[in-house]
Image 1 (cartoon, rainbow over the protein chains, first blue to last red):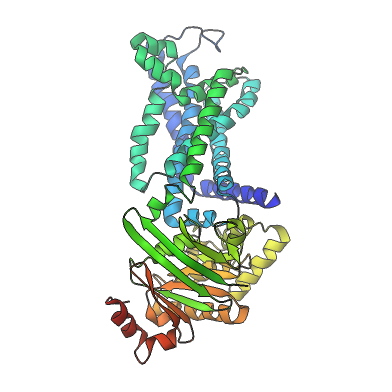
Image 2 (cartoon, rainbow over the protein chains, first blue to last red; image 1 turned 180 degrees about the vertical axis):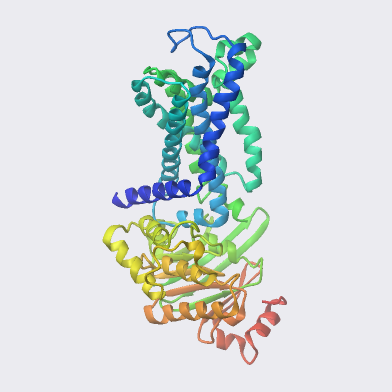
Length: 264
Length: 239
């Protein structure tokens, strides 16, 4: 068992060191949500009125509404970035190095997933600190309650990235991931508009947003910030996370997986 | 003690047969060169040997452990140097080595002792704090070889390890691994398409179009010809 934990510690440390080394990536990961918060939200503040729906007990400004969605955005982008780095690793051979060590492959994938989620969570808290400087603050209890919500949400989105990384063959295809995964997931979710607002424009859009696992992750985060547990969102997040992790383990399985296509 | 053993290993990508019933043995302490032109099936063979994926047919045994039945035991006894560089360039030599050691269940003082011994062998002591990016190509390759030996494997696999290196470095690294095999009793499988990396006393496997064309001592196989000429005559392709 110590060998398993030693591997987990080593993989997490490597991810952290690589992340610290790539300052541009760290800054980019913060600039993106900050731009949305400062520019986009400020512009929309006047246009959008938000009614009082749970978890909000009073009238809420748009900047406050959008924060959980932007936390989710960080998790989503990071999950995908880690998928990009998996493809990159595989091409560079580091992934092969990882896969030849004498531990079960599913555990190695879980280690990668846990490591990248830890980095994502760190980024979310840095973003929240910056948002606080701009005057968008939540209760201390909310910040604390957020942590157990970020873990399943981050793992679920990381697992999606992992599953995708087993089928993406080339680095260029990350542009495809942006267009066909990140953007639809983000825009067709409750990150930017509440569900009832979506329902006003189209019932179909509302239904898509409601089943989008990213919406559920955002709602889990939103409720946690107000120290409330959204059980349905948590269940949905866990279920989709398990499905994607299953797909990733299948994709990297040496006997029937898709990984051999990449080595051809 | 069986070194490396392959029995009837076949693999196909759809309709294209990449490996066709390949069988061979490499006895413990033997340096075995695997020679083949591009597309001969070397990469597929390495992917199967390192369990990147598995073959539906055939058997691989590493130091007596079946890769299909006991993959972790087999992997534990195997060191690999991949064709592509697998070092983290922006991390230090120490970080790279301790990362690998931890993946193989080594940590703390035990890992550190092995890391220092590995650097000693490389004649690179005192360079633990250097970034890998600052090392030259030859040193990086030697570092990868040293890293692959940290967990004391019985079988060492190297997939075209001298690609991209200059002639002098290439010769030094080839001699270094020959020496390791002789002195440490390490079973070595060295894939290459360069005939000058093979010594007369080495076991030689020639892979051609997915089939094992020849298996024997290099000296005996080449007869009176140079190895490059022998290879060309056998395969109709330059090595």
